[in-house]
Image 1 (spheres, rainbow, N blue to C red):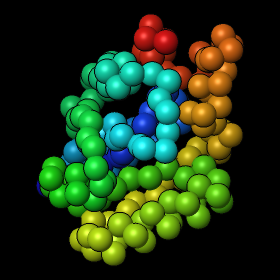
Image 2: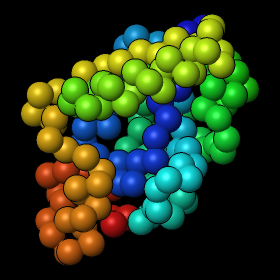
Image 3: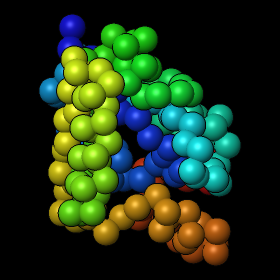
Length: 153
């Protein structure tokens, strides 16, 4: 069984995340979306709210599982039997950042392969950070998040 992990903070989940995940589902037998604890980020939304949004968005996708984890992502991959880690790439700077992480992960766990999926060009400008800022200032985020997320925000 080909199992892939798509880790992230999803604060909030954007339509760009959803696009990457939906495109990933056809490549793997199971895609585990895992809300990770990132010590360098201060979350705006609670972990439970982010999990609830993910569950609502992917409720009808049988190949997607939602969970959370703490610690090293490669260790979590081993724990769930994931041989692949999916990462979305929007920009050159994303690639440089993700490449360094992928290479470090490969040193830690060579059997876990990082898979980079390029974002849809229409989403290359979108980031959770920008959407969070719009949300904090009571702006309209309806174009940037899945409709299922709006009831939680």
